[in-house]
Length: 391
Image (tube, rainbow, N blue to C red; front, side, top):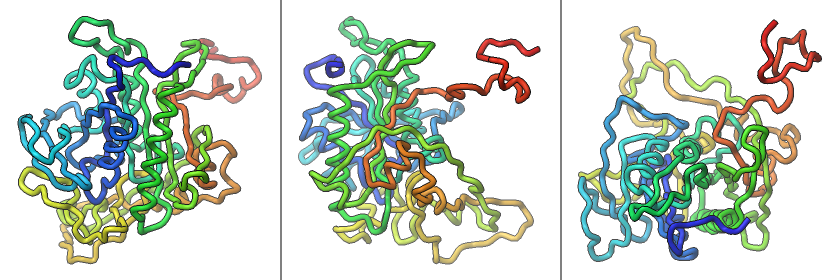
């Protein structure tokens, strides 16, 4: 099809994520945003959680009152910048105003589309996540995919304030981008190549968005694309990249929690003990990763598919009051490194293992079986289908 329709001459893109503002556990969004602007000329509006919100899926905290703050990230990496509770004009050295919300990634998407920029957004991009989101175990847990799926489900969207009709009454294109950590440390060069590849993929999808077809809606535009990019320098060099259309590998994650005598106040399993707190705040917006050498990243666990980081070695306070407690402590090795021969050819996990960029078209729904699954086991050959009554 021709490139997607836009309200203005250049696309207005909503960029969100689940890793929060630039920091040790969110090293990708600033450079990605800048490249979307400089290379493609896109108008990027950034609305993101005010801190790390990984593993929350497409959740909405419906009892919370969501507050907004305004972040003015500074070069070269967006690690510093003024944070205010009300918007203001840009000062010298500032080029962008980002909105930080005290909500989930899905909340950021919906509020941005309906409350902050109604009738303006042409495309939603979520990410780039620092951790793969290939396979169901990761994808169904991912706040990055959750934000993109929230976009697909936020239609119909209002039109522009000048009275023009909405372009998005039944579809808003959404892309989720994830960088899969393979080895640590992650060098600045491999992140640069991944961002270059991510922007290239987003541009190609925007220029020639694909079609989906099902018995309910007929032929319609793909709702969401999930893009997984392995952080392997040799595979990401220009001229060596390979990109494959993929489907999602169905797997499971097993036990996620362990009993503990620690309290949440003493230990956050997402933190890397070698780093400062991962999110900027109005009282401390200085660089958050001063211990990291300029050519490498030792980012803390940021998402479902990120490599685990070491447990803290600093003193912790233990409680022996008899109360049952658990902390998040999954065994990621079987999910991150499954035997290649066990992966179905064409799946996102297979592409990742091969070093390919995987692009998976998705529907914003819980998918039922493609064939079968209706009827009891004894009725397997009775031709049961959706709508068949129980006998």
